[in-house]
Length: 397
Ligand code: FES
Image (cartoon, rainbow, N blue to C red; front, side):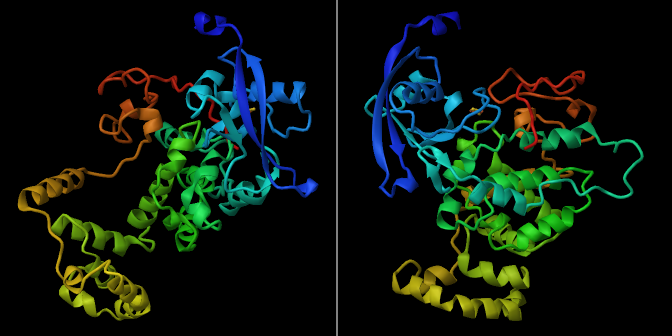
């Protein structure tokens, strides 16, 4: 490490997106060359450019240690914490050696690299009731909660509210009303907390909202963007599973129809999905009145797809099937998953790999901590440790 820090200062050119709404002018690109050691951060480079060349450059920062989440920007088109991005790495990632710096996406720009997080990010966080609604009666001293239960919500507690996931969310780009990855990860923090009294109400609210948990399109952008490995999309999927499997909130029948069709055919048979979602898996399910109603409302889309050749009548009516051997492989996956006694979801952030994680209730799960990319997880059967080795600082925003 000493060698890395001993490297002499080098020149780095920053190409910054500038915008000052009060000036009435359009956004423009501005370039400055700074001189710093390569291990220094992009934030230090921006601050040097501001000190030496242009005091009007707008950037927000505070801790400079990847803790406060203030310095979210885009570096070479990717969301990042400016204080947590080394200059040499940023230069390597730049097309022509010039580091491109822009404000985060999906949020209005206040000035230069400063975005209005109140207008989007914080508004959405407020939407999910980001506090504990305590079970009554409140105990005289503290609630007694299992360690596993708290380990389970630790991943979402690692969020520093930097907005990187919001910046890169494709669903929000298309539908700005989508509650979004940061707020939904926050929602899991309370849905997964056994001290909270409103699990069903929270999930029902987020499932019924057309811009809630079912609006996520699984693009994985938030997973890649998060500098703290909070895995927002993973938390959204967990919200969905608890809502549908445990509380039978809407989506359960659709999910059952989907999985049954894949089990039977190996591929999705779209034409059968709607009737099975409403009428169940029997042949008579097709005649369930709500299915007919939904089918009628979907007719314009179906006709459009037929006219454009995206579907053919026979293609829609006949099941798509995999060859027998491949279908057997798909069904073997079902057998393996369904042979498990219960669903368990200790998060990967803590346990490393879910296959080796021990189900809740087993003492080995207590205190089992392993960072992705870190050392091997403790072998199953090893003595439990009382001290988590998780190196990040979980913080509730
Ligand atoms: Fe606090 Fe970068 S300045 S996270």
